[in-house]
Image (cartoon, rainbow, N blue to C red; front, side, top):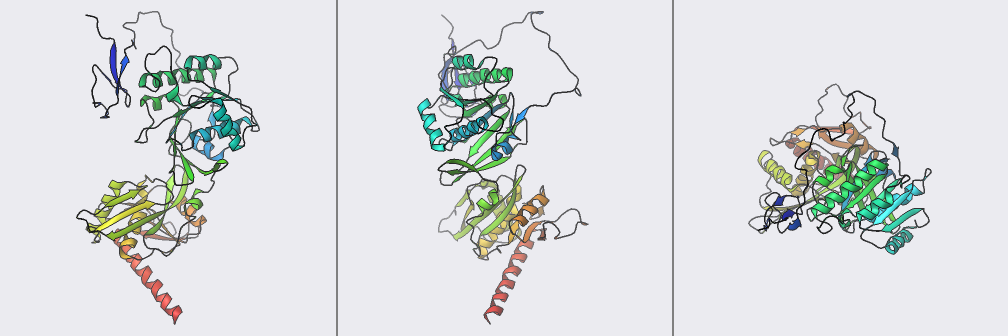
Length: 472
C-alpha cells in the first residue's frame, strides 16, 4: 500500500500532525487544521565538499551604516526609527477597514513626490488597479509617479522586480493573497504565507529595495499565518484604533533599526490620514473638569510622553457578583488594584459595579498607570472630584506602596507643557533633588495609597471652604 503523501497543518501556529484533529495541541485553536500535500523540506544528507565556504569577520570590525531615507511623514518616520532602511522588510498588520491600504498609499506617494523622489511600486492582491486609482483620486494623490499593479502570483512578481534597477519601495497588499504555483496548498495557508514571504524578502535583500507587507489579523488581534513570519521581517507594525474614534495608532512591536513600542498618531479625515504632532492635546480635547472619577495619567509610549484621561464609574449593584468592565487597560490589573484598595485602605468596592475607561480609545500597558487609576476609583467611590490641574503616575504594589517608574522628568515636562500645575508621583530616590523644580510645577510625592486618600480629602475640604468664603 502506498504511503500517504499528505499532512495536516495548523493555520494558526504551523504545527504539523499525521491526522486531522478538531483542536490543535500546540496552540489550542479550534478548526484550524487543514490537509496539505507533504513536501520534502530538508535534504536527507549532505556530502562534504559541495558547499561554499562562508566568510567570517571580527566582532569589532567595520560595518557600513544602513542607508536610511525619510518618507516625509513625521509620524511614520518616528515609528520606523527615522525612515526606511534600504533592503529592509516591514510587516504592517491591523483590523479590516482600519486604514492600512490608505496609509501605505499615502507613504508611497509621499516618497515619490519628495525632495529626493523614490521609485515606488504598489502591488495589490485584493483590489483591482481601478480601485487603487479611485482611492488615490479621493486622497488627491493621483498625480504622483507610483507604479501600481494587481497580481497574486509570486513567480510573476519576482520576475518583474528581479532586475538591475528595481523600484526603491515595493508594497505588497497583502501577503495572505500571494501564492507560489509550485505549492499545492491554497493562498493564505501556513506554507504559502511562509514561502511567499521568504521569496519576497530574499529578493528585497538581494536587490536592496524596501519591502512593505500588509498582513491580515486574527480575531485575537495577532497577524494571521505562522508566527515565524514576524521573525523573518525586520520591523513589525500594528495599526490600531477603534471604529468609533477618529484617530489611529501605528505601534512598532519589533524594529531592528529603531526603538520598539514607539507609536505614531494619525487622525482619519475625509482626505486621508493626517499626522497628529501633539497626541496629548487630542486625547484631552474633550475633557470636562469638576467631575468625580476622572484623572489625567502622564504616560510614556515608546520615547514619547502621552497624557490621557482615565475615567472610572462606581455604582451600586443589585447582582450577587458585581460587574467589572474595562476598556483600554488590563482587567486582571484592575482586579488586583481593587483588592489592594479594599485591603490596605478599607474601601468598599465589593457591592459595587466598577467601570474603567481610557478616554480616546488608547490602550495602556505600562504599570505606571496604577496611581492614576487608583485616584480615579477613589474619586468615583467617594464622589470627590480631582482638581483639573492635577496629573498622576506611579506603580502600586500589593502592600499599597507607590513605586517609582521610568522617565519621571519626561512625564513632568509634558504635564507642564499642557498646563498642569500639580503632579502626584512616587517619592524620588534622590533626596537632594529640589522639589517642585521640574517644569515649574508642584510635585506631590506619594509613598502609600493612604496618602492619596488623605490628600484628596484635604483638597476637597479646602476647596469647599474656599467656596463658602466666596459665597459670603
